[in-house]
Length: 139
Image (cartoon, rainbow, N blue to C red; front, top):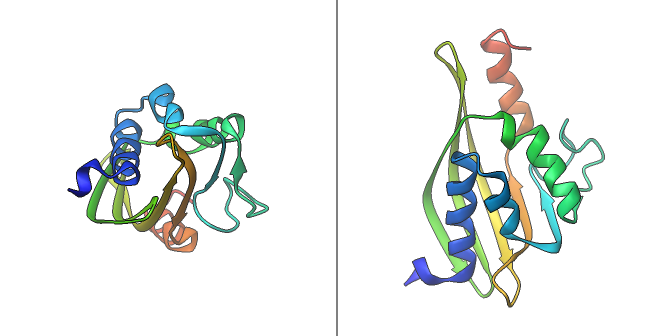
């Protein structure tokens, strides 16, 4: 069953804890030397596009991005392979006052032997989000 695959569990718990705004539980999913790129490539969250390495940097990402958001994360598919899981996601951010953004993403979750996230690479278009924010008058 895919629900017991360690990388699938990590992807499910990552979404669950992000939606619950449970920072500590979300951070506990990661190995000490984990890598995070969300999105992959340059963005205001990561201007260099080099990603975040280590729990302190990943915690900083939470504070800038996830912790400030009111997210609903739906997975239409989770595909396990070896120690990874590719998850096809739709992420809705409720901005209040009836405003929201919706972004389609693909997350690649890689776990180590202990089942901790060693790397998380999330592919999505920052430019597509900017178009939505401008249409809402927020940029």
